[in-house]
Length: 131
Image 1 (cartoon, rainbow, N blue to C red):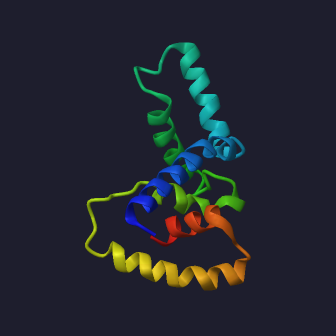
Image 2 (image 1 turned 120 degrees about the horizontal axis):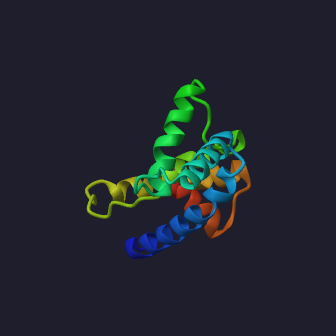
C-alpha cells in the first residue's frame, strides 16, 4: 500500500475514532463526574474562558488520580485507549516507518487468523495500534 493511501486511511480512522469516544466515554464514571462538574461551572459562569476539551483533559486526569488510576473509559474499551493515543500521525518521521509497516503487515496475517478480523476497517485499526 502506498504511504499516501495509508495516510488517507489513517485520517479516516482518526475521524472515526474522534466521533466515537464521546459515545463510549459518556458511559464512563469519569465522563459522568466531569460532565456534571462542567455543567455546574457553566451555570455559575466560572469556566474562566476554558473550553470543554481543556477542562476534560485535566478533569479526567484528576479523576483517575483520585480514584487510584480509575479508568476514564469503560473497562471493555481498554484496548481502544491506545487507538486514541496513536491516532495522530507524524509524517515527518520516515526513517523507520517503512520497515515498521512491513513488520506490522507481517503481524497482520497471524492477528487476522487468531482474531477473525477482516476488512479494511479491522486492518487499519490493527495498523494504528501496531505503528
